[in-house]
Amino acid sequence: MGVFLSVGQALAILRDAILESVRYDPRDLTQRQTAVMLMVYLSSAPMTVRGLAAALAVGKPAISRALDRLEALGLLRRMPDTRDRRSIIVARTFAGTVYVHELADRMVTAAALSQD
Image 1 (spheres, rainbow, N blue to C red):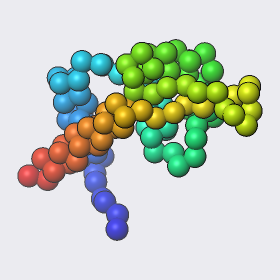
Image 2: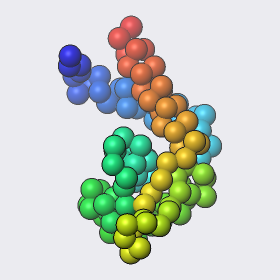
Image 3: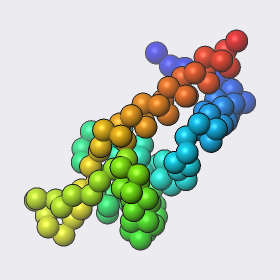
Image 4: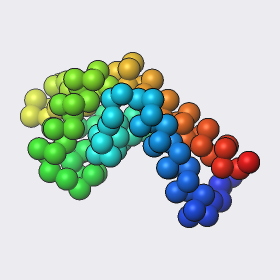
C-alpha cells in the first residue's frame, strides 16, 4: 500500500517534524548526523564507517566528525569489527533507538495533522 503526497504535503510534513525537533530536542542534530542515525538504525546489516561514507557520498573524516558528536550524545557507539580489525562497526544504543522512534513519531504526527 503506497502513500501519495503532493510535494507541498511532503515538505509540510518534513517542516513540521523538523520544527518539533528544533523546539523540543536540545541535541540539535545536523542533517548529516540525522542521516547517519537513519542509515544505522534502518539498516538490517551492521554499518561501518567506510560503508556510511560511501552511502552518504562523503569522506570518512566527515563521518568521523558526525560520529564523534553522536557518540558523545550516547546515540551511537563505535566498536572494532571482530572480522576485520581495520574496520569500525557503528553500533546502535538504547538512547539512539529512542531518538529514532521519537523522530518517527514527530513525522507521523505531522502527517496526521496535515490531513486535517
